[in-house]
Length: 418
Image (tube, rainbow, N blue to C red):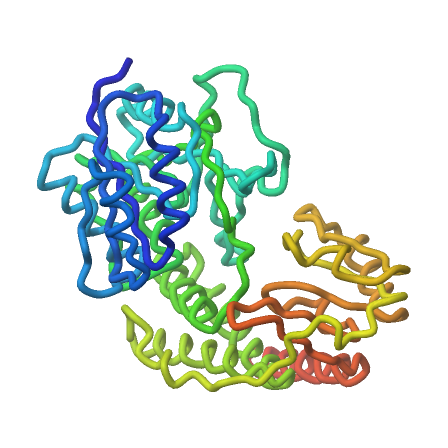
């Protein structure tokens, strides 16, 4: 049994029930030598009091302000540095860990001196569906590819079967503290989103390995499909700009990325989703002006009125499409004579064309937590946000004309540029 002492760091903000569930799962770890440190990012739901009551051995650090996941993890990493832990295990506050998860992570880094980080296989809570086993960066398309995403749980025949990846999610990653001392902690100005990807990339650029051991398993409650909100849109876009502008191997791809998001703002305005358009515009402005850290304009984001009642839509005889499986909003939410289809992450061009054709020529509803093509070509789009369910009634012909016009503008600008 390994004896390296591990600091387990959890950052939380108003997620008391989830943190207690995670702390309970940590009680069953098949690993003898660790301390649990919870960084409470100024919660208002009495998280710290509940932890003290039910898990009194937990070390609690009460942050006087919410510094995001990046800032919170850095506080935990600083604690690990100050107390000379050889390893630190970063965990999202909404995961449940398998009893052997930490054992496999420590064993991997113990036996791979060139590796700085090892992540877990992350499953969607209550299922055997993989959220990711680490991920890789597609530099040409300026996006990330989640390993094994949407597949059935990976069961490796040997504990020595390890994946080398470009990054691991801070949802569950074990880091070697000697390399944290050498290459630095998480960039606090990213606040949330892309911070773990930037950190992994920075470390890997110094010749270190980033690994994922699929035998280490955690279950994630929200798995990236949670309802959207303007602040999530802002951080995802601004930090994505920062990341690819800093690390992209081809600087020619970045202007196109910037243009795509400028067009996304125009599209949000076309559909009267003004708070999301404001978030995109703010992200672009702040990136161009090197404004980082916490979003200063969040409190003046426009308020959007929306319809939240699903029963305002005539739900029978419709083709209903989801960009993911969304828990309680499923076929049971609709009346009879509806056809349901969940878009696979393995969507082919043929399937895409067939689906868009079906959406265009029959009554249809598209469900998702972010704007996508299926929403634009459906009669109704159901946008899932933290503030509630927004129902957008589309004019398919008008949307098609709008998209054709914007594509024409893009082509014209490209021709002028040449």
